[in-house]
Length: 202
Image (cartoon, rainbow, N blue to C red; front, side, top):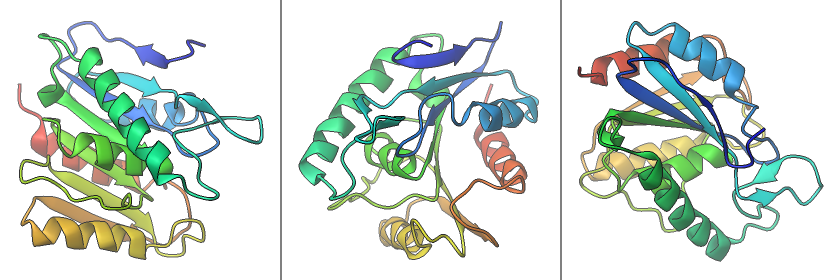
């Protein structure tokens, strides 16, 4: 596996979906979900899944920054590194404006922190939480928030806080909850598909 990312290119793709995994996972973790998701969308969407830069302290998987305890200074550095990576991945044929950024848990928080000030087509946060001091800009892309009501790892109030921050700025967002825990359930496929379909422009 490429140390940086896994890529599934599609001939004549019109859009792109980039996946950001959670703490202790790696670029392969969200691939089955991502493949099912792009397969349910009529548009041709290529799929990329990025590896976090650091190895997990327990030796399995990777992390975007230390979580226990949370190192917010490291998180800020990681966000800037990710923003640079995302910009470098864009091209004239596949600009950020035709790219959706989806993250789970720590990856969702990275998606919001890095993507809210870049011209993405949309941001998708699954079981995410706002970084310390996160303040979305007025040109933040549309955001879809998905969270389990019984999430024992990242309580749903974290996504409610994100929604509050977006609401204050009168930014476009959707917030949906489901009966479940720290996961992306099958029922989220339709919600994410509808969100992407509503924003896709050829």
